[in-house]
Amino acid sequence: MDLHFNSDTEELLKEEVPEKKEEPLKVVFRGSYDDVPENADLVIGEGIEEIAENAFRDFENLRSVRLPKSLKQISACAFAGCRNLVSVEIPFGVKEILDEAFSGCSSLGTVFLPDSVSRIGEGCFEGCASLSKIRISESVIMIGSGAFAYCFNLKDVTVPDSCVLVEFNAFAGCFGLESVKLSENMGLLDESLFEGCRSLSTVDLPAKLFKIGRRAFKGCVSLKSLILPIGVSEIGFDAFSDCRALTRIAIPRDLREIEDDDAFGGCDSLSEISYGGSRESWELLLHGKTLTVEKSDCTLATPNVVFLNIKDGVKHHEV
Image 1 (cartoon, rainbow, N blue to C red):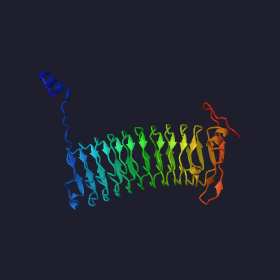
Image 2: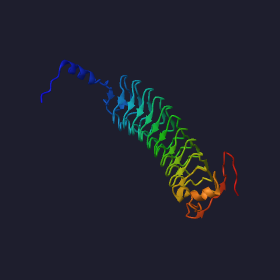
Image 3: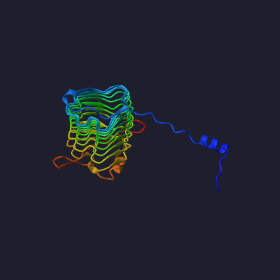
Image 4: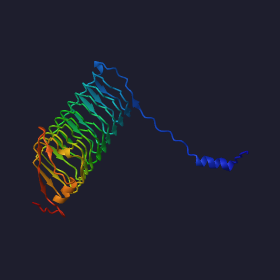
């Protein structure tokens, strides 16, 4: 069968097929410098929109970098392993800092992330052992897994309310971390989020929190007391294990699951649990068992449980 097209059909086809728009070219810096002492202090010129993956990876002579105001993205591993990098100026306009962009920059002391940054990638600053101060963007939505892990000298962290997700291990192994204020819009404390943060003594938990993940506070040996928000319904395996200084914890009545009997294993000092519900609901939560704590010396202890029996915001203590 022959197909015939008249002028009307051709016009109709022209109308139905949209013209393909060309995307604007992105100016990417892929690295044109040698790792030599003469290039220790770099100023990258204006017009560059992206620092390419691995562009300066393992540059041992690099000490400081000033990035252009035109920059939008720092790609994966762009400065990874630059162990003598002391300072980096990240301009407003950068939206994403991708995975491991500055990992292993062990001399980097202070980082200021402008309010244009919405995403911090996985392992972005992992192993920055000298990092003592980080200012996180007020526009950040997500912080990737291991983003600040093993930043041994980091003292305090504020995660702004713009952030809805901080992925697992994000601050694990930050031995010097003492205080944390989390975003009010976080519902999940992901797995191993603060595992091994042995100096952590103050945590400001978000009101919207509903789950504390596995090993979230494991090994936080300086944590002495904690009040869980009323919406918390699940405590994961080993969530507070080896918190040896923890003496008191307040648990809300809406808690529905303690994933494992060992959630408080190694909490040698735990003497009191304040529970927002009744004795009956506590027994249902534990399936009729008694909560015991296996101490680090393998002996067993049973903390005292205070039943607050909170109804309509009013406490009704049970004996």
